[in-house]
Image (cartoon, rainbow, N blue to C red; front, side):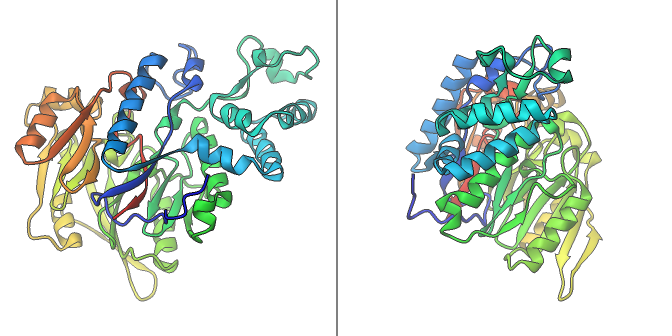
Length: 407
């Protein structure tokens, strides 16, 4: 699959969205059980058929608005057509899943090499359980004996439909995340193979600002592209200050247009796992914000200098936005209004996680009625989609999309 006219570039959070990477939820969600929910970062078990219907509606809304939708599994299939790449991917996939028994590793490698690239792409996301292999001859290590009933040789990645987190386009380069949790590390392996081998990235000589070899965690949901020169990065449960400093160094020294990074320190709490769960940009001067954490925020600036960078503490988020974006006015739209109960309820179902597809035009979950009405009253065009099942994974429309191109 080639896309000759697509040159990935994102230097805005609200510019006209032209191309995006999604993942349609699939068999990996059928692997969720009450026993593994916590390990795989879910709070509940979604209804798979319904979640697929909701996701298909999301993709249709994007297409109806002139946005090219690419699926990450299709991009992976494209690169796995090369047998050498497929073999190395299998080796790395087994390694990241912690297969320690040499006999098991060799058996599984040979087993997977006989499969088609379509099947490998599916297994990389939906997993490979002991019961999936119709053979009694596979060598068993200690782990296979101990977890005999429900042992995954390759674990499923049910969070894959939140494609925002494994990476982010910043300016003309790609940031590949270093994920905090083991459950999500295979997602960045998949993205890295696409980055290194797919024509979309290879043809355009896209630089890499950060990748999954860095020890300190940095995730895409914490990165907001406020302008061509300013980005915001959340520092909390999933992204560390050390990672943000490294990203700053890479951007400033690597030829990016970014000159200013607003670091927004958010509480270390699953409810606010990424910056975009409490704060998103919806128009040039307007932002949606969850007011329940206002008192807990601290904001810092990392500013590019002739040599290196400087760091300073900001008075508050509003002043920092005005100053860094050179705006005389900033409008903060509180999700749920000033009702603390409504605001907290709707933040839990991702009211703040809006996806701007054009200035003043956003996609949200229709279930967040109060927040949507407030945005509409403020002149924001709101396109609501169903999200009763999608939201069970703890993410909204922004989380479910990785923009490749914005004008």
